[in-house]
Length: 288
Image (tube, rainbow, N blue to C red; front, side, top):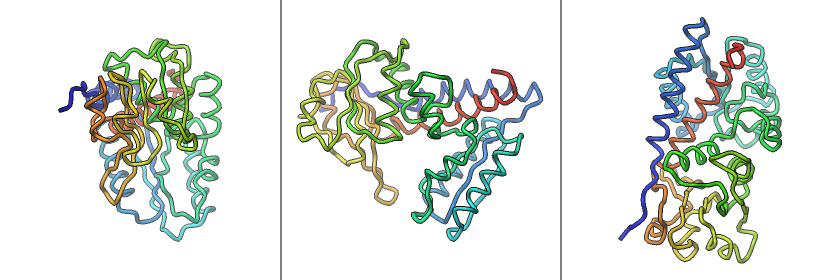
């Protein structure tokens, strides 16, 4: 039987989106209509569904959401041309290129073409550099969402041992930088370990806060968790529309607190996307 306290993401997202809506209202009162542009390449059903969800959320918050849908046959130059147009358009404050794009195209090259100040994913090389140096800029959404989730649920991070299983560019590495920064909701002793380390459970078993970010379904099991630890499932993989999390549900029998299988980190990631978008609009309007 599960004894762990659940750490849902929905109330965190609601709080963040309420703050975003207030900022949107302030911008509109100042004559600025915040705009989050989206780009979809190809006809992947799941990606199209994510775009619809984000567009609907944008409308609810008061954003306009211009959208470009490129055919699967589009070239790298076609994608770059769309980004150049959005870069030049002063009425567009944030741009999201829905990932993944067709495999013959280079997502990293396209991302590098984007104005870093319009990068709502926080993944542009300039913004990753800002994060590494502790400079202001949009933060990668999933790491920022995890920090916000822990803070919202009153999980102390400062001075504690955090172990991140996974070193990916979208989660493991930026989260390590974020949680090591000197801030009340961070300031942790952070260790990054990965599946290339044969005895990685030796590290996870000592973690006071364990973040699974490997993208390997069910990799974290109860024997890998320190009794009473906080466990955050950040890594997932999909089989069609079925979500396969890194953290086996039986870990709830050992953990003191744990994110739910569905509805944990996901809602906070989307909320941080819109926080980045409204912050970009405020900066470009000279309001903050």
